[in-house]
Image (cartoon, rainbow, N blue to C red):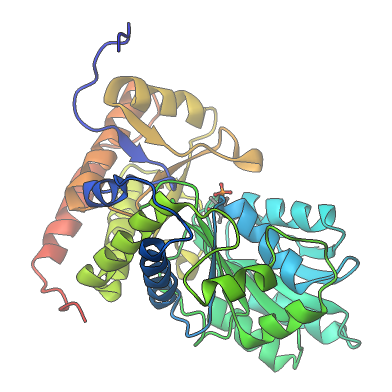
Length: 401
Ligand SMILES: *Cc1c(COP(=O)(O)O)cnc(C)c1O
């Protein structure tokens, strides 16, 4: 193959909050001839991934796997448990919550969208107040984004569950974990979530192309009454095939090889260690941001995300002009500001297959990029992160379960 582009040495630094870098081990696991998806060899793979993925969602119930991006799994969640005209309660955590709300409108649902300034997670008290007002139980579902990838704020799902129970309201709880699953602690069964939505290309370290719905018994019962038209997304079409290890249509076979490997890798490290690693890299990043004299967008520590950090640009400076410098000079991609935050923030992804030196490389690139772009800041952010990671490295890790 001939190309005029100059060779770029080393690995690209993909520091966006998804898609995330795919480990070599997963790339090798997917490097397989595609097989007959109705044959016995596939059946073994099907059974392995359908069982394995439950341990990541922490559920005993079925998990549906779609050959689709996360947006597909959003639609599947709404289409399987709701009917046109149903009211849903959603919280405006940021860009992704807004897109999910817009989708609900397109599907003929009636969202009540609780507004927010995009700098905190979902406010459980506001949700409780809305549910208490809804005496006739017209609200059929509460939809919350666990990790709002546009802002770097999480929502505290156990608090939302508690608020729903305190209001004594029967609505279903639908949670988007697309950028938190396998990065930030999440427990589908224990936290009483009815439908969990997720995707392959973030914490699971896979290429884009798979997405998920984890279910509850209550969600399965609601699916029987749903009159939303669907076929591709229908759990009822999917589940009888999944019971035998198969799919009703052609699955993303090679991505499923990768998924099996990813599940093994997460358990080899130990999920607790995976979460602790993400917490550590997030804290190192926030220390760097403070040392630069810049501001983290998330304004309350209890909502800090361990998947990514959104950083506010000083007034009069464009985040995208700065991002262009880090790409041009250091071959590093940082996340852009989305819609309301366009030009005002850049996002540092620290989820997926990241280690101490990758995050330090990324933070060094940010610090150098700030200088090149003429953004006023103090030096020493990467140093502050190094100091923190050195201190943490001196503490022993827990053994994998
Ligand atoms: C990435 C992301 C999405 C969109 O997923 P796609 O795979 O791009 O369709 C939705 N919600 C959240 C929270 C995300 O991070």
